[in-house]
Length: 147
Picture (cartoon, rainbow, N blue to C red):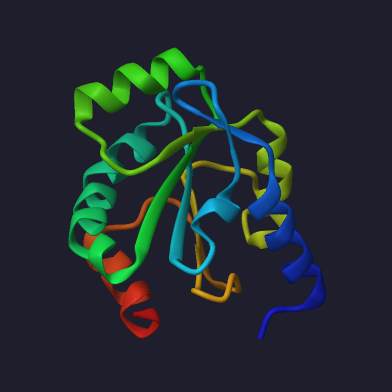
């Protein structure tokens, strides 16, 4: 069970002011009611880049089951847009400033590193967090009990 501090931090994350690749304001609350895999990453982060194909496969496999992958990039929007086009990323990508890492620390990213992943269940509760890259098999293990 999450602590009240974790619940408050998850709510801050859900309402954090982010922008999409077109500069339109967006928050994670848009996907409330779905299982949300929030992946903090950057184009300059090699482990992040290596993890993207697994995220793409998980998105394709589970989007029909109410799972949404949302990438939050700590990066320049034009670099993210170019990288997404090059890779063929179809899941939502949002842009954040470095302050988003401060928000990730109480969720388990104590060192403030990338990549970092948080999985929220359909009720908006934190179900899992992981520092470092995950494999496709790792994502499947995390998602299976939530489906």
